[in-house]
Length: 333
Ligand code: SF4
Image (cartoon, rainbow, N blue to C red):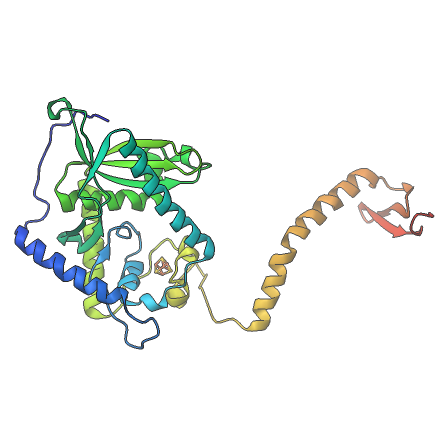
């Protein structure tokens, strides 16, 4: 776990360290109060910061809702809850595995505040390799651990692949924000295979452009919160159906030219749609069997008795119509 990087420092936050400390205390207090809020209360508390795990979300409106309309959020599905619990378990397991081979953690789960993104979060910690000397390379590196299902893990072993995924790209935005918050030039992204426990280690250099894009988004969110007015919907609404706020902002959503999401449906329509969804796999099966029937019996004038069925193919217009009738009974046909 060594990398040859000449440490470069830059000033990400021009704030005085004591001011950062003061804001951090304020954030902790406000966020704790927010977490304790009753979802059923009528007044909507406003969360004071963005969360680092969410700052990579493409949609500023979603970030606004996360902060100012949390009670409108759709509850997590059981599978999402299970995935989150699994993720936590694998992160802990990865930490233990690394400790067993001689690494140690420093500043584990310490909260940081990134003023320019008005974002807070808890860093995984600094991974320390006590066996390497400082002069030999990097012996202490800010790290973030994530885990993935064993089927998809091999596809996400490069930053290009992670950045191409809207969902997983947010992991890198989170790490990038933490690098800014800790004034570090490089961080380590550790991706654990949930099936095998294998870990991939990727060094991530602070990305100024990514930070600048997140900063622009932050400005939109802060202005919207001040104005108490959600920002515009994201332009590409492809992923909106997966957003926990889709039901809340759906009426404003456009699904492309001439398409508008309308969310108030009648029970009868819901029942019909549910039945359509139920029948959908049968339609495919029916079409496959119908194609087979035409290939097998579709010669005009063909007639055949197949068990209890009589199959006849007659000319019909320019084609052939194949009809099947049950002419036998049970076993005695
Ligand atoms: S539904 Fe779409 S536009 Fe609305 S908050 Fe979610 S991602 Fe943004």
